[in-house]
Image (tube, rainbow, N blue to C red; front, side, top):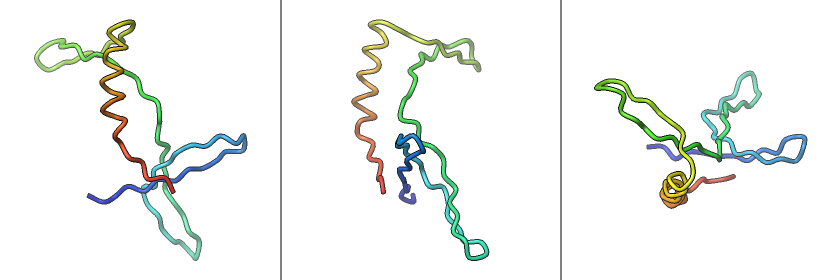
Length: 84
């Protein structure tokens, strides 16, 4: 598996955003990059079995959300984004 490449860009308001570089190429002497924003926030949904082939997702809150968020924070906190 190829190592992913990330860059941080600053917009006109001074806000930094992380992007994943999908590809780079040169066309007619110009250098170009295809990038996609890396969203740093996530949503937690509960998967509910709605039948043999269908699943539904519902939002959660309160104590259940806090408990599940702590599990995801521990697991996702180990992701290493290589910022350039």
